[in-house]
Length: 183
Image (cartoon, rainbow, N blue to C red; front, side):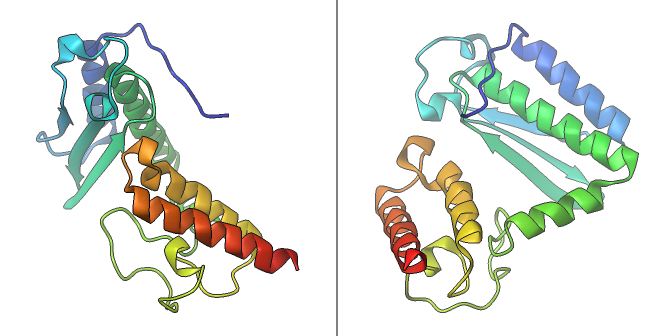
């Protein structure tokens, strides 16, 4: 079941929380920014389109640029809150000293998926067959294929703003892998 959030916090209050998290974290340039289609006063309106509820937070830390985009919640203000929760979790994990271990677990869970905005980080793979659309090596275990499918669904599904043709290829790929590995 997807995680859903509905907040009573205002847009301004969440921005204050983000600023406080960045202040505590340290090393964050003052130029962090939030991008969204809606004006803050409209961020709580109901029945927002995917484009209207999409929120991106971008920042720089230690010379690297980062961004988080969220559109899964039904309102822009709720997506901004989730982004703040992610930033706060990142900060706490870094402060506690186990961010590297958490990153290692995620690399194990999704070994073949490239990071956002990265190319060429996936392991060598054939560019044909059902494993290619899922960013997997041929013959990857079904649990890895299912995890890759779920991860790609978050960004590639048409309801999440993805391309219908790409999504159809991903669906066909996982169905073929399921049949292949069931026999």
